[in-house]
Image (cartoon, rainbow, N blue to C red):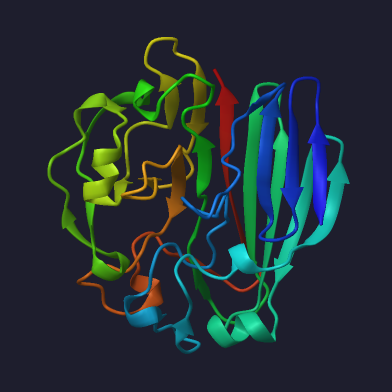
Length: 292
């Protein structure tokens, strides 16, 4: 089922499949990628209870092995409505026999999408409804149209961070495993990454850990028009578009956790930035987007 959100400036759509915000418009301008299997059928999935790929498809946990496809099961699950208002909606996913077979933990995931005066906010609240500590990772995967307007090109855009960074991108290896650092550097002694498809053809994904910036803007290099994502609550950031496709979108992905590392222990609780929730505890993480 799909829900429509409206305020004085924007309209949006949220679907119960995956709990996703799937449209965000100002007038005739659609900012979110609408999915096209020729490039990538996804749009704006919620990544839970893992981010990225597991080594050999599995990771050990105190409650037993967790076996999931890349980015977890939430993005393929049907959420239920908790609350609807004209400018916001909250959807919920809870454990089921299907989820427990992959991830042996009772949980509640509530995702809220809210229109603001300048954009939107997405908030994810994870609660441990079981009797033992629960490890999890979570992330966003928001795909923005790039270019945003007719007559523009992907290469007309750039990513501008709040501060000059001295950041090394983690290298992606076959199977989505992570290890070492990417060469050449794209965000070292600079605040700007000019977008080129060749970057992603070579690197697949740019992955940064604990940046100094609280946000990044996706803007046209000449006009400055575009948007800014605030990801300050998340310790990692992924930037991706489908390699070898010249795809007309870019994903900006705030992550709490990441894919399996080449040198990982194989224990869920040891994954970088994994959260361990005590029984009955809840963690809320939010990111926001403002139109510039």
